Length: 147
Image (spheres, rainbow, N blue to C red):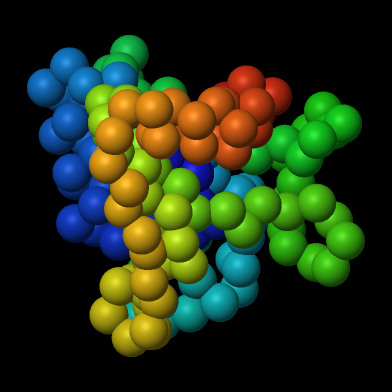
């Protein structure tokens, strides 16, 4: 999965449960993306808080690989999302190389419960691998481990 914001507790628990079942979970987040907004009361919390929660629940599972997004040509994670700073706003997920989901939906409380966001699921191995290899994999490969 690649997304700018993650704080929904239902998804966090599902990702940890998948890792515990032996599923390889690769998660690419934008560091400090919308941090002020996500820190507001009721918003759900920051990506740093989500990473801490994921790591504490997963008991350092080797199946959970969490990384911070690095822009093309960069070496360090993009720290915020100011105009022109190279931040990622991509929303992507693939499942077992058989389904890909892309769209406007963040995985935060605001998007799950209050915003009219939408995503598209596309089935099929060829479609999934095509999108994953062009959108997600290059970004994941240049990313850095989340601290």
